[in-house]
Length: 69
Image (spheres, rainbow, N blue to C red):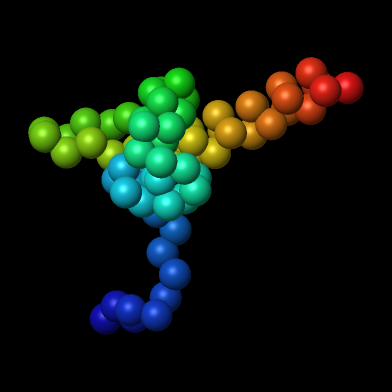
């Protein structure tokens, strides 16, 4: 029995969910996903690894912090 109110931590998202997750537009989300190597293709459907996106964003934040200091 599933509970619709439970929170499910997704391991992949589609492009719409990725844009919402990153609070950016579609083109920027696609560029970030490509840089992160996060794309996973299933037939005609393309999903994006949340873990790879998080790792990439963390690396970018560290690089910017090191650059600013």
